[in-house]
Length: 123
Image 1 (spheres, helix red, strand yellow):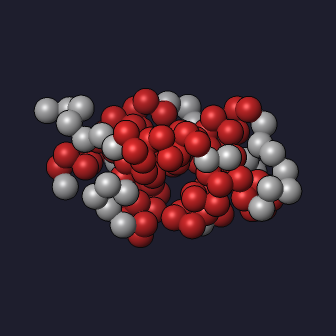
Image 2 (image 1 turned 90 degrees about the horizontal axis):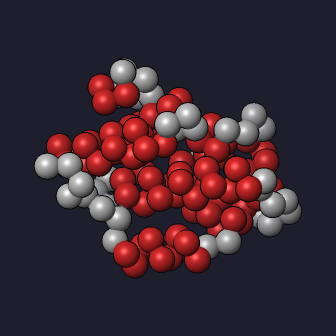
């Protein structure tokens, strides 16, 4: 039964209210700077650190991907620890034609989100 796993409305509100700097910091704490940069689609991982410290502001497309990544991490965090989440993002995934979620994230976020929900339902 897909669709049963969900992020709580409280966590969703908390994520929505975060500034881009706070979202970047949230992701760096859980995924590290390099993996966050891969998800957001920026070549220079240092850019994510600049965002987290409020030294720079991400472009709108990057901010959307930051927020999508935070939503995904928030969802996975309902049942998994940061190490498992990092492993899940980097590992081959049967729901994504054996590609890593981190690779598919930028081009097909809805499929990655569905794969995450399937993973959590099977956990």
